[in-house]
Amino acid sequence: IQIFIYKVQTKIKSNTEIGVEILNTKSLQNENNIYENSNLENNIWQIKIPKIELSACISNGTDKETLNKYVGHFIETPIEEGNVALAGHNRGYDVNYFSRLKELREGDEIIYIHNEINRIYEVTKNKIIKDTDIDVLENTEENILTLITCVENEPNYRRCVQAEGNGLRTPAPGTPRPPGSRCARRQRQRRRC
Image 1 (cartoon, one colour):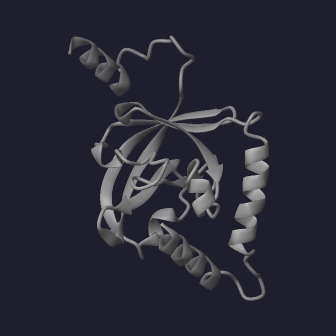
Image 2 (tube, rainbow, N blue to C red):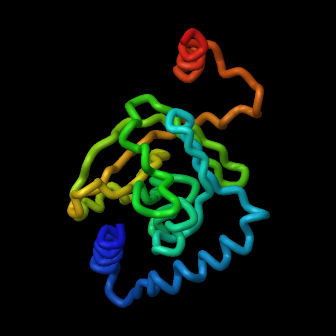
């Protein structure tokens, strides 16, 4: 993931207008980590993926220290609107939140929570990309959630899961979903099993 991050930083710097300097990403990540980690009690920032039984806190940055504790947020991407991009380990570390990302299929639900924003996303893509393919982090007008992790024994490739926000907020606990929704149909099917 570190090589992928470097390539994102390099592309952003090369696309920046002359005279505008990008902040040193490492120091920005450290400042954000201090802010985020000191305010974790006051802020709610989580990702939940019911199909793979994932519930994890998110923190700003994708440096080693952050990914060893949290799902990391690519600081070059937005937090609430547009293409929100997250990274996580999938094996070989104490915290491997993205170990089961490869199990996700089109239509699976991802819940993204940031303070009072609770958005439901549905998986649209689960693919392997080259570590040079940083276009998946470009911002969009649509609400998209992009999840990035390494591919086992393939250092030049990354798994990329993308999901589109459907505009719905997650209901309060215990509130049934609308009967015609895709998620409600899946809930009924699970009950039959």
